[in-house]
Image (cartoon, rainbow, N blue to C red):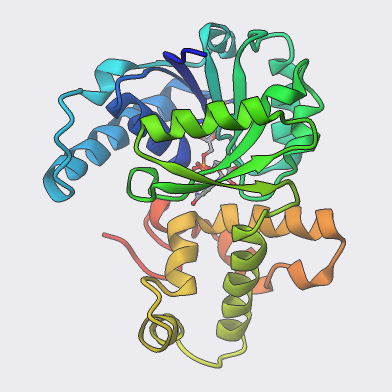
Length: 281
Ligand code: NAD
């Protein structure tokens, strides 16, 4: 199967990174979101990602990413895609409504990747005509600096769908670890518990924000502590993901820390809007 046109739905943190990575390797991208303002902001951020990629990470790509990306608020534009990557907000009713709309838009031959932190791939695939052509790709953030991703096999996903997806990922210098579909897969099932427990520890006054992170970095050799990681992912996304895990497993170990809820209500969403556990700029 030849893939040339890639549609990226959702132009937030992940959609911007995914659109950039595929544009960099010369795919034609259709980037979809719900407002012109969001798309303009996404273009600005993609320009910045590209500038830093060339400056700091010595990217030698000759492509000007924005030349390869057309932005639109019209979901029907994905009907021209060979491969669709959905990156909308981690909110089950919102994702489900989108998939109901996509049912009559996704071309028969196209493959569709769900980029999600925890939502069931099998459930979202059930809204589409060809669930065997749906898989999860759990990209990491920032996408262009995290080349290994989880590829999630839904109940009906065929080996051919997985093989094509892995081949596509290789074409943009990425690789996938294939896992089965259970909410949170491996990464977030484990990571969200750690991040949430770090927030509970902060709430209990056990240690300060920098000291909690320092323990993970200096005692365990992690590159980032759990609170820095939460800021990078987005505290709203962390909260939504914990809610999804809580609902999916009916297990109280995933109940979100009240401090996390309070910070999200207060508008502290982490790096993407300038303040979370730390302040940015
Ligand atoms: P985000 O909040 O930054 O962006 C979500 C975007 O989706 C927003 O721009 C929003 O306007 C758009 N959107 C909402 N409804 C839409 C619709 N109907 N049509 C088109 N666009 C729509 O979120 P994000 O961090 O980019 O996360 C996106 C997905 O990727 C989530 O499912 C999340 O769990 C997953 N994910 C996030 C991370 C991370 O580190 N942030 C990592 C891996 C996976």
